[in-house]
Image (tube, rainbow, N blue to C red; front, side, top):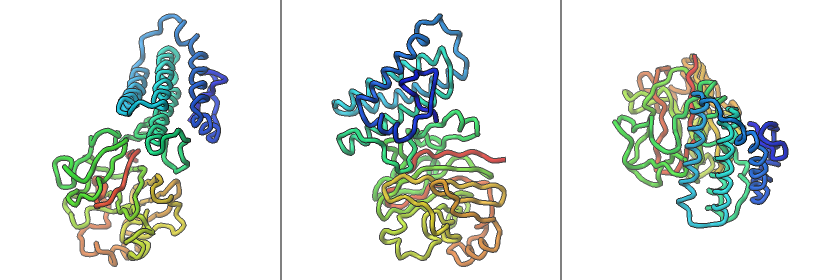
Length: 359
C-alpha cells in the first residue's frame, strides 16, 4: 500500500519504507506534524475549488467506509480516561477527516484505503498504549494494521469479510439456531474464546462453501487449543469436518501429544504439516490460509505453503484409517460445507477472517 509523504503532498504519493514509517508514527510530534503538513498541502485543491459534481456511487461507498472507521476510533477514544496520547490521537483523527473531505472533490480510491490504514494504525497504537502507557511502534509480529476491513484491491479480487470486528453477523452455534450464550466474545476487534467457560460450543458460518480460499489471523495463549474446520456438516457430529489445527505446539499438555498430525497447520489427526513451518511465538499474531480447489487442498502459515493433499489420495486414506475418524462414514470426502471455529476452554483470538469463492 502507498503511504503519504508529508513533503510532497497528496498529489504525489510515494512508497514510504516500513522502518521509516514506524519511526514517524512512533514519534508523536513528527506524526502530528506530518498530518498537518499534508492537510495544508491538500487544502488549496480540496477547499478552494468550485463545488464538486454529485458524488458517484463508488465515492459514496468509499466515504461511508472511512466514516465508519472514524466513528469506531472516536467511540474507542471516548471510552478511555483523559490522557495526552488520547488527545493527540483525536487531533490526528480530525486531520484525517479533513483529508477524506478533500477526496470528495479529487476522488482516488487508493487514498481511502490509505486513510483507513492510518485510522486502524492509530487504533492499534492506543491499544498498545493501554498495555504500556507510552506510545511505541507496532511490533513486527505479522499482524496486519488494517483490521477487519477490505481494501479496494481485495474487493476487486472477490474477497469478503466473514467477521466485521463488531458482531457475530454470519455466524451461529454448531447445531444451534443462534450464537452461543457463553464461550465466545467480541473484544477490541477480535473474535475470541472467552476464558475457561466449559459450556461453549463451536461457531460455524451460516453459509456453505465448495471451492474457496479462506484466510485469517489468530493468536493463542500458553497451552491453548483451537482450529478452523472446513467441509463441515451438522449430520456428522463425531467428525464434522477437516481441521486446520491451531495449537501451542510446545506447551503443556500438548508437547507430549501424539506426533506431528496434531501440530499447528496439520490436517488434524490425518496429515502433518512441514516440520520447518514458520510459526510465530505464543502471544504473537499468525496468519493462516486454506485453499480448496477441486480435490486439492492447501494449508498455509505466515505466507508459506506448509501442507498439500489430494482428497481420496493414498496419503489421506492411510491417515484417515489410523485416525480417530476411521469409523466415521463420509469423512475425508469433499462436500459443500460450513466453516467452523472450534471451541475449547482456552483462549484463542481471531481477526481478519476473509473468504473468496473459487470457480
